[in-house]
Image (tube, rainbow, N blue to C red; front, side, top):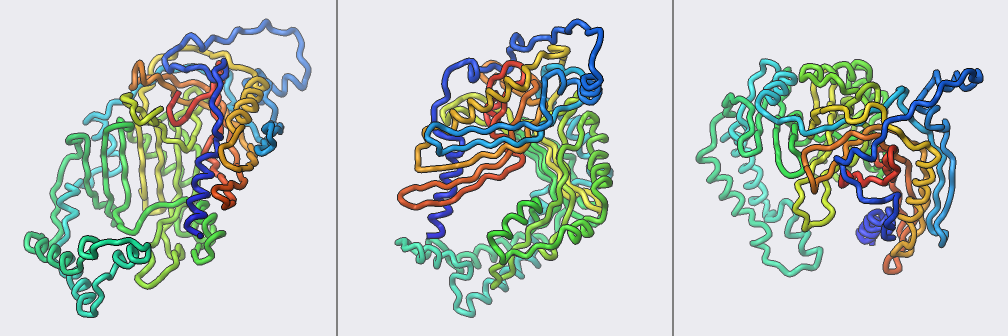
Length: 502
């Protein structure tokens, strides 16, 4: 029953955005990323001879917020006609303190050899890079250890040491155990592998370069080993990943782990202060260190948007059934976005690169994304995706709709999206943060490698409720501070699908 409840909850979450069809009107008209006609220059008003002291103070604090009549707190409420969906807005409104916002043309930064060399030098300096395939080959000694482990199972009569056959039996399936797993077959395989295995790790120095769209290397630096991966392909024209080389290591947001401990008390988690001690540097020092890698690559227009503590996973030892983070490594994970003339791209969790249908032949383009993790020892993690090349400014100072119009569009569209739910479902959406920032939009039907940076409004918060499917009622919740519930173009008020990019 527990497994079924999880599946039901997952289905409920997939329905959070509602099932009603989107109406064809001005709010949701078809958008094209390169259509510049919808972006108008601000018409400068005639200067007033006098202004009240209060007005002058508002303008001095944030001229853009004053021009758009943005309240400090956005308050609203509403519900669907059937009352099953409720909206509550009690949100802080974040508006960059700038006098003007331009609209820029952007394209894909070339993922060529000069840039790859720049990335390699920025993160690894003079440290040699070794061929990943050769470095990753198991040595004779490592294979012998594996064979000793397997033969020990065999001597004990344990022909299913990983429980693969037992799982199929428990599920009530009909199957041939030999096809699922054979201990003798695995032993034979490792004995054959042993014949050609090297005596020690093979280190073949290489120059990182894309070969058929891929490269994997290993770097030894400052007492750590790193996997260094480069890739280009569908969705990602540029994908750079650097991770400390540890089979048991994967960085997880500490806040996410803390949420899991609430539902699973078996998970052991250190205190926040203990985690900070393990990192060994302050948050400010971590930001400076992470930013230095970007500066070395010439990416000087990026600013930190989000900093969080992260822990590494620890796989339980054999016989243990609880996950422990008590001794986990820790770092600060810093997310950066580009900022142009004081106006930043909004950090949002959607990677983009989606397609309208599985039959689509469009070549997708995911978003620019930069995330770097560091501790007192240096680099822990780096992810650099789809960097933009900033082109000409298409509009010097774009005219934006007042916030009152934007908030009304949000209210209408969120209620429409959550009307006529397919299942017996009730939910409450609470919006607690609204931001104005850049987003890259494009028209993949016209050109999948160029687009525009345009100002958009994003509405963040949390949703909770319950869903009944086949007589089973399951509560659900969606609390993702990086997931916008709706994105609205600040210039023309159209709704943008962040998964698609337009």
